[in-house]
Image 1: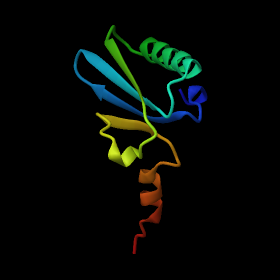
Image 2: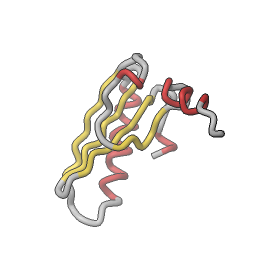
Image 3: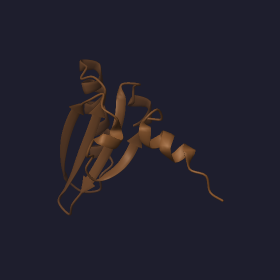
Length: 94
């Protein structure tokens, strides 16, 4: 998956149930070449499953701060320049 992610990818999240998996992709801009990369990621994901499982895909595009958006499920990719990363980097543990 990591080789398929372009700088236009902002976040990817996953929601799993017993019978399906939903992959949510957040792009900065909706571009055809990124849609092709998403198709490749989904194909590879399906190929790695041990059983036949329904994979649902949702693609959105927004340039709003990720912290302002409601991303469902577990975040499996988050762009480095997002506000969330900046906030985490600024946290100091004493």
